[in-house]
Image (cartoon, rainbow, N blue to C red):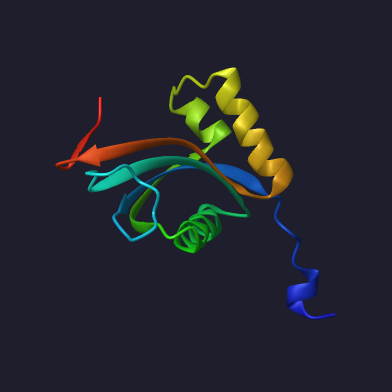
Length: 116
């Protein structure tokens, strides 16, 4: 047995990521927007994998990811004092169950500022 086969498989976890995207043809952002912030829940064995998967999926969707900020797992966010509602927890569970990336919220930017 190789060392790789002996290595215990890490469980999937869900990470909260904030992804800033720029403009690209076919991105689906509103006319006049110069980018957006996407709140995503992504599954992965670690945050780096969750980021890689999220960026890959957004690129497949004709989005232009520029920057990703990670906020950690549900437990890490609770430790940091974040209030996490039932809707958010359900989306996180769905990302875990489906081993997927869920875009929970999109805030377009106009002139570099979020739309109100």
